[in-house]
Length: 357
Image 1 (cartoon, one colour):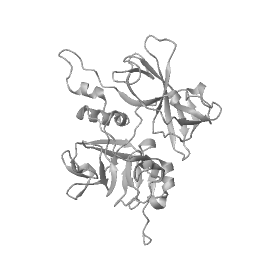
Image 2 (image 1 turned 30 degrees about the vertical axis):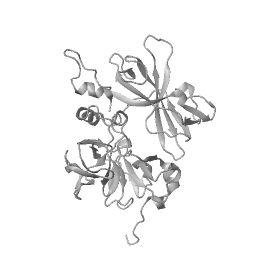
Image 3 (image 1 turned 45 degrees about the horizontal axis):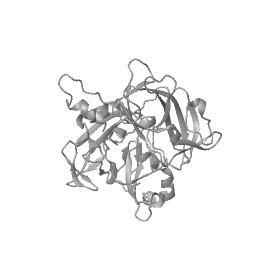
Image 4 (image 1 turned 60 degrees about the vertical axis):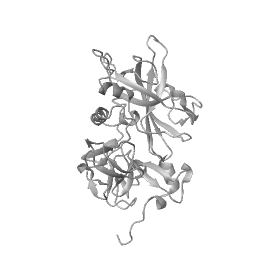
């Protein structure tokens, strides 16, 4: 959770002194030279704006790269792309201007697309020099080829808080500690939910959002039986399932995998469902937990600044208000992308269908 949240929620300032407002955006960025051309016309060059890149070039994320925390507020005096750095940021100083300069689209070998917003930071009082930073809107992996397929000088209406729905759809049955399976919408704070690692844990909060089921908001449907789930499991595209590969850890080096639902899509047993609206519900515990939904393990909402900035604004604001200062660490498990899943293979990943139907 953002450090600024505690100041905003706790009347921590002295009498008559206004509390520092929490950042509107809390994101993690890379220095531009952390993402460089591995092969192509601009070999060795850092990622940059439209006039500095060449479509078709292949980029890599430096294995030694460390993301930097960037806290931003919209700048009232500047419309559109105007932003300023706020207190607690790992980049620049409070009040420094930051500008959205480009939007780049890259494609991984498995066909997964990564959108990157390019930002320009300028220290106050410096009129000419600026530093470039890259903000991937979905995870990137080192030693993976990312081919630039599109570059836009105008990022348009790009929001730094593009949605990452760590949510279950209404109707999903959640396992309670007493063995009951109840619809997620019937859960209330204080009810004890069964977790994989810490037994019965009280639910701290359940958030809800109703969204149009298109694009990034369209849910993933994991049909009944595919992962051993008792019924269809419907989740947001970035919601991670917990998979245990007993007989093969593959290239990940561990048998315990966290897999985004979108990487499981095969158009048959797992598919995107577009159209209409979807009711999403997110569950928060004292820790980032693995719970049981439709009988299979899946993550709860991990509450920290990096994940909250990807939630719908109303939902993120409610979490910040209810849990000032709460910052959770990710449950143990290796993040597995589509390439890792292809190495494991669908025969090992998905349960067999009954021949008798």
